[in-house]
Length: 309
Image (tube, rainbow, N blue to C red; front, top):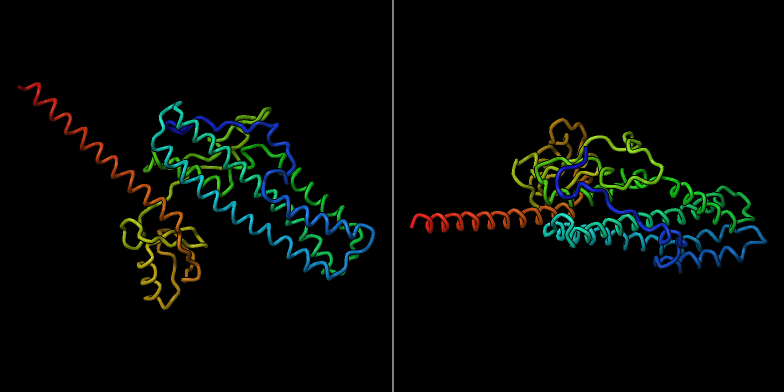
């Protein structure tokens, strides 16, 4: 069953011609990839020495930096999509903008995968050197390692690529909550296009059930304040409340969320700025809706007074 509300239609498919470009084209990672290729090319006809490991690690460090930029872009696109969704009506220009941001978000996921494939190919070579294997085909190994990983990824359908992707699920969750704050979100696959030749029901084993994030602290039973989220179980708590709770338990205790058996310490908790921003957005939205309701009530009273007179 499609999700309720305006956002029930799947996002548009990216233009295939736009996605056939090289992983390095226009993605800000071409320089790093070229440096690695140039370096490996120098070793094409001779075994790769152990000293090359440190050099490769230094050059691929830039990929990690680019992954950080991608992570920031995920946040920026998500916040923009949520703000536009607040104003959007069915088939409006704003609705199309949200769809465009959805496409851009998925392309960023593809970029992250390409970065990961290149980094993993280099790590394979570094591992082989550490194991004292003779690497006389470093360039071929690198290109083959990247290609094999990307071919496997590109062979997946849109629903397989993004349906369980953590970043994409969070992105759709944020948009969903703009209009359905009290409803669990359907599987993210329902927001994705069905690729040509794909069975409509082929995603049933990919994502099951909906998602609903609680904005109430399990300890205080009040709205989250400066939330901290567990890296073990993903439950969130108000910062002051969870600190005091763990302090009273000598630093370690069972997760206070109902039904959760994980043991927590402060090391298992991280400040959740993303969740904090979502709460601020939700509060701002609620305030605006209350103001609009008050204006509507006032208009009804004024109309009633005119009729009575």
